[in-house]
Length: 256
Ligand SMILES: NC(=O)c1ccc[n+]([C@@H]2O[C@H](COP(=O)([O-])OP(=O)(O)OC[C@H]3O[C@@H](n4cnc5c(N)ncnc54)[C@H](OP(=O)(O)O)[C@@H]3O)[C@@H](O)[C@H]2O)c1
Image (tube, rainbow, N blue to C red; front, side):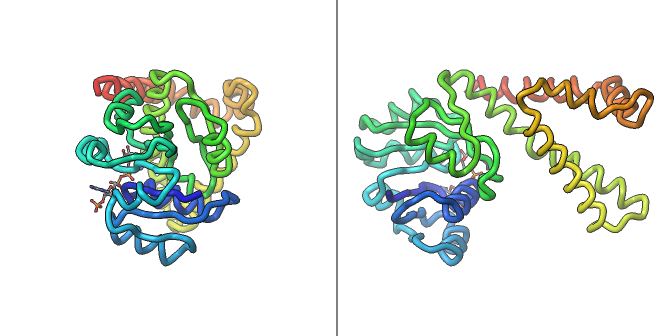
């Protein structure tokens, strides 16, 4: 299996790292020359990676093609590329719908949309995939948790949630800075915050068959610190405002 990436930016770097360190069996990975710096870094770091001269060369030499460019670039370049009907094409492009992709790609290849996120480099995290397909699922299962979606409209909700990564890190950063202001050394503060939240997340995964309200309840003792935390943040509109932000991200996604 030969894997080709059109667009070598942030998400390609994460996906290629994940693949290279996974159990996926592949013959080679071909990267586009843009971005040259990232492509060279990946080539130096991992085996079986080559850098093509141009985008068409990637399509000519690979079986699976990943579209990892921004929507504006995608709209400009995909229509000029000649794909093959026996190829599997997986688009990471946030706002190009499946009908739009099919129209632009022209040939009757198998086309999918996926939403990998940066922790895919650690082979962790959810990867929503649309439409469902055994081969594609088995590929992404080796890179994280595949979530198959059968309705494209639903996939926009997952895209909206993916806009909460930076807000999550901002929260960790705010808490770290709070500790630092009170005299804790930054490396200690970061160690504390990151190990606390990785532990809480792991616990949430272990308990993910239960309603998460269970964990909200379990982690509070009556009149305790966590009760105070959740009550005060609720009162301040912290959670309502997170919901509002999600709806506003979704609204933007629905406009395109
Ligand atoms: N980052 C994420 O967490 C994430 C997650 C899921 C999906 N996505 C989606 O994946 C896509 C890429 O996101 P990204 O964050 O990786 O963006 P990015 O870091 O900006 O990467 C896009 C890459 O496309 C390259 N490019 C520009 N014009 C090109 C052309 N004509 N041919 C080939 N490559 C070209 C750019 O190269 P230059 O640097 O040389 O301009 C850049 O390296 C977007 O549609 C995004 O919505 C991103």
